Length: 122
Image (cartoon, rainbow, N blue to C red; front, side, top):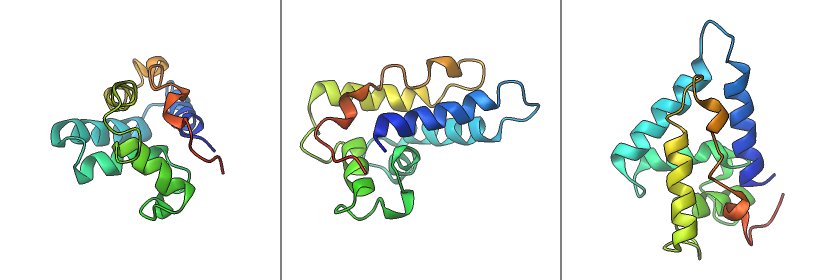
């Protein structure tokens, strides 16, 4: 999959909770996003949040895998690190995670397909 498809999968999970009495997935994503924002882009909390958007989180620490390459992109640790367009998309993706079921329709809107540029698709 692509980072974008993984973002859309998380968004779908959040949308599925709209009418539910409990919102565990939404609350988990929000908690991780808030910790990532507070601790910063180089933190373990940022990494934990960004693993929500890779194909296989269990493989994300291996930079030779597609998930590892996706995580490097989401951490700003690949060739797109320091590129404003990509830095902005990572910031939006993290900010979007603070959305709960009340604002989930905006989730992922500004984390465009740009994040997938030049990455292999599994």
